[in-house]
Length: 231
Image 1 (cartoon, one colour):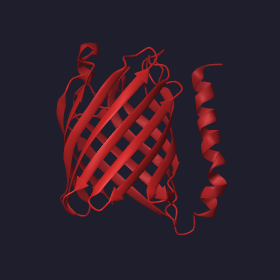
Image 2 (tube, rainbow, N blue to C red):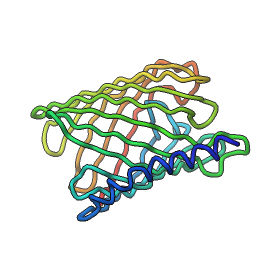
Image 3 (cartoon, helix red, strand yellow):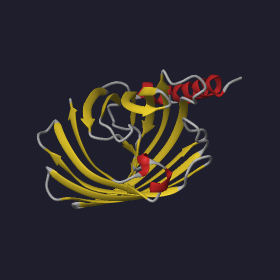
Image 4 (cartoon, one colour):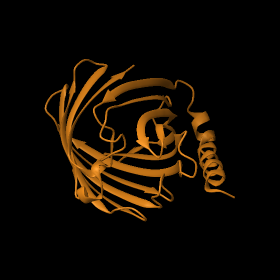
């Protein structure tokens, strides 16, 4: 049995396991959508688009009480012969003791990848954050038992601090560490500003860098601009 025939059923089973809770809160739920483009597709501070521009989009259903969400997404990439990564994600985002939590499971597939390329992965993510006035801080923990491509399992830990200068202007700095099997371990960081140009359109300008320049162009530093339209 191949890994592809194992990952997809396991991912779907985990998503379906949450369906009773989702169904209980489905009444009054809403859909939201986002599309956008950027000068480079950065994930964990490294490029997924060959340091070229990319497009992305998502459709997200959220329960009436705001606790549960689920939906598909896509982003253009350049990896293993694939130019498009599709994603299905489901999550639970409670609030307790003044902290916001977000626990999610994502299944990702790099479509039309070269034969023999490992195109699928499942990622487990836990986020915790807290805001006090204009200041906020967050911590993200992520694990994949088998990543796409030649990388096997990996862990990602990232801390972020931010400051809302106004309802329209927000700045943040984040530092993360990726440990992976059959791939370079590295530290990455980014700093930037997000400007809400309207209630629906946001512009993000951010500088990225990593400690793994010697491991390829995708790990080199870059100034990235991104615009997103939410509706």
